[in-house]
Length: 294
Image (tube, rainbow, N blue to C red; front, side, top):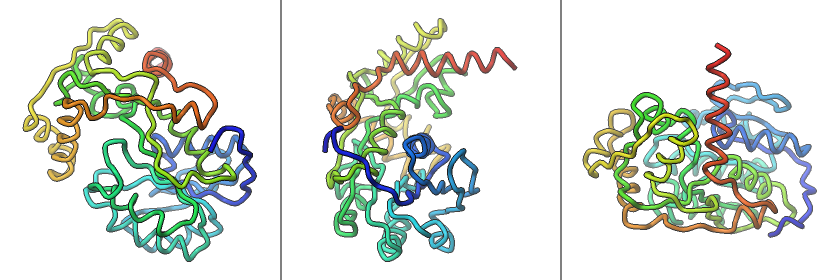
């Protein structure tokens, strides 16, 4: 698939997690391109230009209303669930019978097809839908600018805590993920593949700390934890099994597993992915502007 493909899809797209980091951006991108959107969230939050609908992965009674008239679906797995397939696969089977013909799943560059957590859903998707894509973004740049634990520790303690050592990551902008999601949902020709999404360069957490320091003018450092320290820190806010999996991902980064970049964003959107400095300047400046007006 290339950016020269036309976008003639006219049916409704169900965006699950429509108030989240990529879901909100994907919904906005679809609406801006003239597509009908059903914005699904647990509180049926209203988004400009979208039809709100209540949806909860753990409440199958919400599935039918959410799927009504939907032809395409953007799938954001339940957050913090170590076994998302248990709730996602029943929904996907219902989606097939309800008339959904294309599904785009948000996964992770760290989780291969058939791997843990959402990897099982990835493996099942081609057998359920003739048209599909699995987006496997690297770690989000917004982890350092939004509401993520890293962003909070930057604001509160001037520190980023990981077990990733000096390992590098091709951090990716959520705006770029959403731009790819819109293309894979609406282009005439479906990808029918998994797509690894990265930013333009691989950076260590020390690099990230240095850029945030330069952008904000406040000193930020990267503090390296052991695997056990990272697991226990995460277990204070998420289930232990999920915390262990996340700490394992940090350990994999330390070993070089995420030290790569891809051309996927450029190839599908026709423009280069945003750099971390660009995103930091854009979003941290927005935070400063908001604080200044309070």
